[in-house]
Image (cartoon, rainbow, N blue to C red):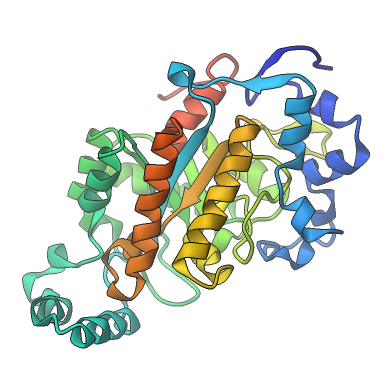
Length: 364
């Protein structure tokens, strides 16, 4: 058991401390998701009891009140993990229509023409191939982020893109110090062979190892997906969140090693919980002003726990005329967090720091 003024890390004996409170232990281990086993628990209807209370960082808050504290580089009090799921590299037809309608309404013929005719310039001209723009925005605040790319050859909606076409983009991202991770396919969360296949394909194009993962649509089966990810060679996951509400799926806003109730052992993987996703934030709010206030409230609460706020902003948001407010909110969050002296960084850097004394870095 850990007590006193103890520095928190992903390998800390959280189990010994959280076991003292049965309710927190059950939430932390997600006992309610074991039966029946399913992959669609990314929806909050499965949250037990008081939804609003359970979605707050109550486990992290308990650890903080018990004397545990987290440390970050340069004495920063908390961290903001920045991430982007690359669901689309080329705008689907409905996106093109929506953005074109916005440009037409605003009397912007130049942008309208580029939106409608980008295919004439080849795949490289796609407005959703905007990784450098996103990196430039983040660089203004000394930040880096993680880009999670798909390599699956099947999807519930449509084939997304051929990762081989993005070799130069992946190289630029990684060479610049940002992270390239895997956005696991819709069917991958319970399929070890598929995970390994997708990981190897991304690594072949990237020409370096991949350690970070987030599953498409946040599909996840507790605790099986964690076990499979560890077997596949991933070092961390950042899928754990809900797609319809904001907050902490297991009460944690710190990286942690998941505990498998079936085996009675921790899994050799770090989970960095997802807390704020773009679409979820805007569905929960009535205006951009309210959305920003909600985001600030979450950031402030995580700061009090010395935790990590994980943001997910899809790359297409930054080039969609019909979602310009989403882009503005992301920039405002960067500004707000920067002023609060947060560590703005990628999942890879969070993983390295959170387990710098007790996690294997083989292959890194």
